[in-house]
Each structure stands twice: as C-alpha cells, then as structure tokens.
Length: 72
Image (cartoon, rainbow, N blue to C red; front, side, top):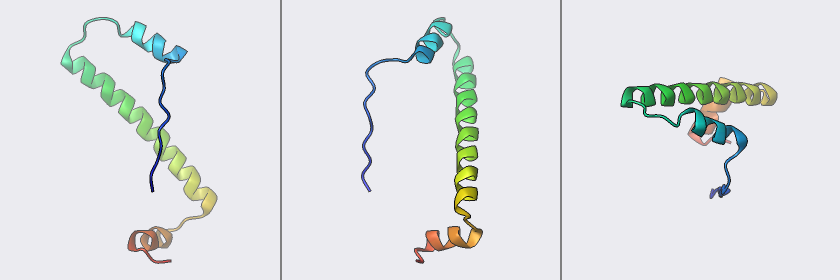
C-alpha cells in the first residue's frame, strides 16, 4: 500500500518557538538528550492512540496473531 506525504512548506508557531528556544550552541550530549525526550514523548502518544484503537475495535491477542499469520 502506497502512502503519500504532505509536503510542509511553512513552520507553525510551535516550530518557530522551538527554533528560537534552541538557537544556541549545544553539545552532542545535550542534543541527544533532547532527541530522546521527544522520541519518548511521541512514543507515549503513539502508545495511547494504539490503546484507544485496540479498545474501540475490541481487538484480542487472537486477532493480532491472526493478522500476523495472515489468517482471515
């Protein structure tokens, strides 16, 4: 299945604010800490969304096993 991505050409207000906030020299360690923080944040959001979808659709472990094994 092919997916298309929207191409963004403008920064939103939050992105501009973050650029201003981090417009200073940072060590590699500081940069990695910030990246880890953002990855953790978005990982939690994804987990929450996944939990919501699983609950809404009533998926069980059997459903996931069937999906993985290609069973209909």
